[in-house]
Length: 150
Image 1 (cartoon, rainbow, N blue to C red):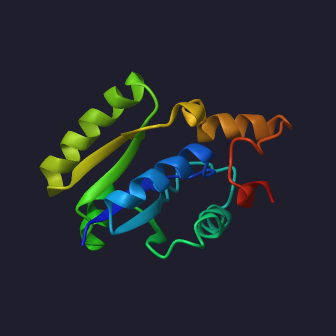
Image 2 (image 1 turned 135 degrees about the vertical axis):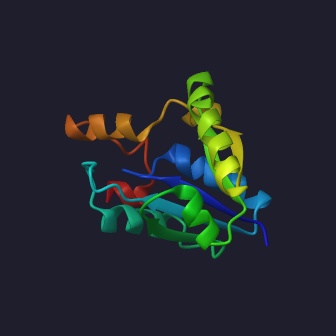
């Protein structure tokens, strides 16, 4: 079984994440959306809400699981018997950032990183932009799945 972990804080999940997950579905038997928990980080949405947003968004897809974890992503991958880590790339800056992490993960745990380019229509969306719009009273409905807006 080809199992992939898609890690992130998902604070919140965006339409960019949704696009990437939907495009990865034909490539893998199971996608584990893994919400990393960092006690030192301040999140806008509580963990339970972030998890629920994802579960509601993908309720129709039994090959998608949503889990939380702490610590190293590669350790989580090994515990879940996942051979791959999925990452989305919006631009060359993302690639430069992700490249060394992917090489380190492979060296540490023999877990391959798979990169998908974001679709052009959602490549401008990031969770940090969504948080900024939300914090300033803007409309996030065109940036996130319906579950987040509700």
